[in-house]
Image (cartoon, rainbow, N blue to C red):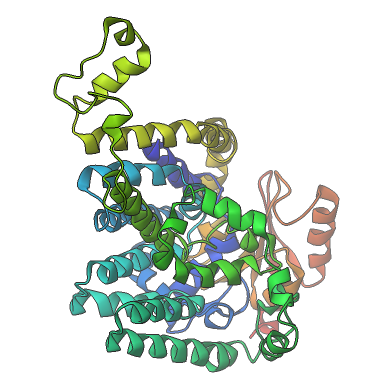
Length: 501
């Protein structure tokens, strides 16, 4: 199943299933960082560090120097997610035995929030999930190898601006548990980093504009107003919580994180600032909005399962299961012939031939699997339908080939182009690769571009219908002239190249 998911993701790179949102934004910024020494993003026409503070994006640089084909970036994302499964297993092993950890880790494949990060176009948050799991492992294990811990910490802080706030809470909880001065220093350092990033770094790159503050209008229209409202109207901060979404998130882990309450506490920070958002996908933890929550829930689930194991073994109170099923834990498992005919006792006898730990976790896996069947069915019918793969490959393979043969051969690589969202990831090799169709960026995109490339065989996103799409193309003819047209593409060239900077 997992192999099918990976193949499905990678096929997107060849069938125009990738869009400039958000693949083109992040990969384009990484390309400019490695080639031009800045994080300017062609898609949104601004420095990406002002939209999200993600200097760790530069790690994509070596891949982009080899090839700018979207396949390689998606391959990297899939490898990062597969490595995340491995580190989740290692975190579970800190709380559980090896056998139990295998069983529990297998259930993560079907966790819908895990798969949301896994299946989307490249996001640097995939790297953040992996790095945070490594960091959690280092902390929970108590080893904290300096040559691993601190590089991982620095790279993780560079994934996104919200990481520092979550790590502030994470290390604060560690300090309150053991009063380790290093944890106190890390708590204060992460908090200072967060304040500097939000107050100075991002505003410097965005000319003082907080690009995503509109998602929190229920709390305030600016960071200062949010802080004021916290003291003046504190009830407002509880009213914005979407409890159904929180319940769904915890339910995906069978509420086990609540048993590991101490390990769970740091998750309250990312759960709240995502859930309080007015942006539907963020408040429901979809897409990549759970990447800072999952590692904490994994650790808390491991601790919760450890607690259940201790209770089963009578470490916290005496519970003799043998009294419930006399003889069941003895070596022969004696039953009367009449009782032996009952299926439940036959199963019980079979299970007791295995080591206790094995059959307990086998039962746990069976329970999880049966409860996940509807979820798998939904995923395969909606997000991972094999029919959609074959259909899009059949429809789009010749379009991608035609783009290479008919368009790229006619437009010099030094040109500055803007295109429909589906084409943009395939045009990152140009010196500028913009995105068409969103009003907030279009005006600058038209100024920055020498060529505009449209798809002619469909109405691409974000255009709602063919009529609005046709009007949009027609409106460009004032500043751009026809350069090339066939049944698949329309290419317009700027009449006055001097009009752009």
